[in-house]
Amino acid sequence: MDTKHYQNQTLVEVAYKALKKDITERTLVPGEKIILRELHERYGISETPIKQALNRLITEGLIENIPRKGVKVKSIKWEDIEELLDIRMMIETYYIQHIIQTFKDNPHIKDDFIKNITEHKRIIEYGTGVNDYFQNYSLDQEFHQMFVKCSGNKRIVQIYSNLGTHAYAYYIYGKQSKEETIAGVEEHEAIFNALVTQNETELRRCIEMHIVNAKNKINKNIHIG
Image 1 (tube, one colour):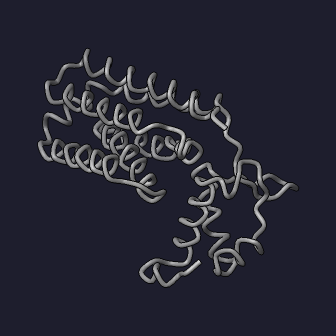
Image 2 (cartoon, rainbow, N blue to C red; image 1 turned 45 degrees about the vertical axis):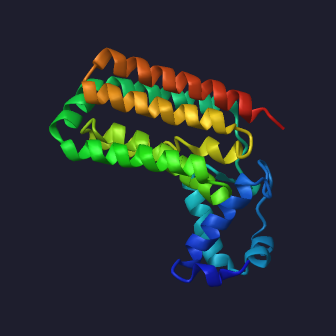
């Protein structure tokens, strides 16, 4: 790996992004044991920043450290994803009234949502490689985190941020169609429009539909070889 392109980043950040890329492109496959020496040779980075990057990925749920078995790429299970999406729905629908009120009282929040949706559409339309894919799901996650932040409950925001709500994305790279991705952003727009009109019933319907559709798409794509 040529680290000259990452002069403004720390070696930990370089290792972190390289590991994510390898997991996403299935160079490192679920269940595979991580050998620090091999990563050092592959990335041209010392083992210390690689270890720190692995710790970060453990927190995010992409890597797991199993006692007496070592560090491995975490194997993804549909049951875990389904439970996670159920938790997301519980949180996002429970605070609907608070979210609508916060959105109404803070006009700048509307601009943040519009910016997110606009950039998300642009990435989907013109993005090509794995880095654009990362940006796509980063914007997806950002949309939902902004939504939950409007609840005003700081503890819930922290819990939601630590759920690893979009970890599944790193296992379905190249499997989800552009049309499916566009449909997801259009569902974000529907959620946003329900916020603008302050229609609680419609907002609940849009959130529930969005997460049910996400379940169906992920379940289908996660099983594609």
